Picture (spheres, rainbow, N blue to C red):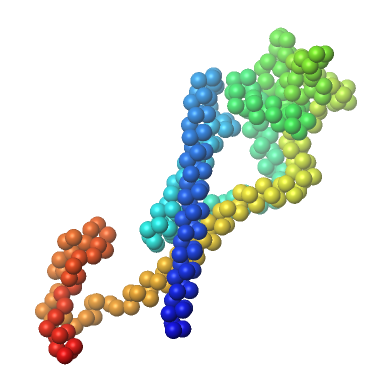
Length: 313
């Protein structure tokens, strides 16, 4: 009776882990597919309106890559859990683990090499500022960041000098100025935005324009916001790493559970069976399928039925 109870408990554990992993993988497969579809739509729109040939900070490309990765990895886990396939479960486990470790490593590098990471971010933002009016994706992102975090440029507001329209050497109406999203008060009477509120500010000192535009760079502004809102920052990190850690744990538990079941039911090595005048190399496996696991009436291994009947009598 005790053996039967332990077997039922093990079976309940097996099904609990199996369905949990199947639900987890199916859910993230659907999410990955949705992100992929959004990325495809966004990329099609980006190609219609973009004049710059490049993918710098393109949200559409990021969504496409994220959606493909999530869908493929989750689909492998879903099939592996539903079919009890150890190979697919191993692939799912190791891929998730590698992604998790890479993300942890990037976070550690950001914390340890903060100065170098800021220099890297600044160099890339300068490239984006140079093509600000050519890449609509980057323009929307930069405008949002400058308005949300009350900042201007990458390291400081003078970074806008790299843009040919805002450079002090240009002759247009934007010459030596910054976009209106850098302005402290960019709205005039009647709620109309004054797009020239940052006119003639790049050639002045910080103290002279600090009441007109935001002089702090966005790299520093975002960093200060993350430090001041540690709870939100920690929550974002958990939101990214938590689901992956859950998938790693479930896949490992199911993997080990399947191995235990296989070992419990595969204790007989048929190579040591005493079958006279039989060569296992000549075994007829027709009908066993590509996986060599499909059942066949009478089995694939010949059994001496006369000998079994004599023992029974």
